[in-house]
Amino acid sequence: MSQVSFATRSVLNMWLKVKLNRDLPLPTSRVISNMPLPRERVKIGAVQWDAQPVGQVQQWSQRIQRFFEQAADDHCHLLVFPEYLPLSLLGSIMPPSNAVQTLTDDTIRDLLRSLAPPIYRHWYRWMSAMSRQYRLTTVAGSALMVDHGRLLNVTVTFDQSGTESMRQAKWHPLVDEQRWGVVPGPIAAPQVMLPWGLSSAVCNDATYYETFRMAQAQGARLLAVPIADPEARYTLGKARRGCFSQVQDVPMVGVVAAATGRLFGLRLTGKAGIYVPSAMSADGSGVLAESLHPVGESFVSAVVSLPELDRVQREHRAQFPVPPGEFLDALYQFGEDG
Amino acid sequence: MPNIWIIRENELPAPRTGYDLVLWMAPRLPAEVQVRTWAGWSETPIIAWDASGAMLAFNAQPQEWKHTILAIGSGRVFKFQGHYIAWLVEADLRIPEIPRALAVAGVTLIISTTAHWTPVYLNPLWRAAQANQIWGMTVGEYPALFGPCELDPAEEGVMPLTSEGTLCSVSLDFNQLSEARRIFPVHQGLRANLYRTQKWWS
Image (cartoon, rainbow over all chains, first blue to last red; front, side, top):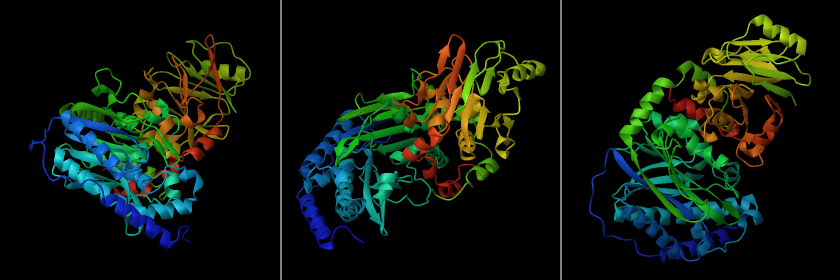
């Protein structure tokens, strides 16, 4: 049974739509000339975002635009934003309270299902418009959407013209997300965008090397991972067991964009970073770029060489091959989805 | 909570009491009779091996566990006090499917002779311990114990060993792993359906 009345949900939904429609008009001009995409050396930017709810929709839009400006000034080709990027917009109709601690799971589920559609639409339109204006391939972070009645956490990628190129629903939602109604993404092949072999996965998907194997099997070389880690305390140990670890064993370039700060009672920490197999970094650390602090806003960028990655991949495959089919058939017979 | 003694010397030292399992990374595989005799004297099970992976194990326990998973890699699995422990070479740890298969089959401790990686997050045994929420013990010149970050107050996934001179030991609580898996249920989130459908293997 619903914990929030239909009337309340409708009023909140309408109020949010009114707020969102008052935002800045979508840009139509192109401020940067059309540049061909490089095929070998790609400059990547990753955003670290303060997820604090915003009182005004324009604050959110303008902050997003500043990151696009920064990436364009830095001559980036690809820009990655964090998980749950537009959830801060709920601050325009709700106080930045400790809702996560004070509301029941059922109430949170009802609110998310009701408010996700207008937030998703606004996020989608704004990120598409910004991608087009700044001529940047953009992994737009992630947002909640209702698809055939299912609440999914979806990341969308736009090309330089602002056209959607691929999307990926989170395959491995956290326990809290599942309590709030988010269901695992459907069984489908990971999408890969040419010419770089760009793919994407959402936050906890990077806990599983299987995500990277599946993407690599489809031709992916770069994996963008928007995150929003609900960890009040940042430690390198916990941070390194995600994307950083997986690209050591499944050689790819991993790009992490992180949401940080307080979001309705959740405390988020994380760093934006660009990670590679240790053999690809000059100091052997496997870290090409990483923000300095795990809270607050930041922007990092680095150039990656795809021919160098191809070489590392070939050597890795020869030395550490994927086990034979019968071994893996047996491994993944252990049961259905957890 | 078994008390494990990691021998760091090149030769077997004098037997000591109070240990439940002895691990010895020998410079070269010792004579079988030597290890058997030592195990008898100390009344403690011992697993000894050399850098090539040749291995000897003696006493009533640990019993070697014959399992089809061992069809790949150089690993060997033993049952010890109701727990499965595996020995792997570092190269096998670089293939994440191998520790995953062992963990899914019930192995809770992987022992290896990994190099001294700096920083520790580059050590494939550390990664295997995190990915599968198991214990990982590296023996040899730089003994170390890795475990899920959830079980480490510093959240780095590196646990302390007791060290006195060349004597190195640890009391390992296998039951703690269930606490880590409750806090962050990694295995529960595995999507076997998805992986079987999108298989990356031929």
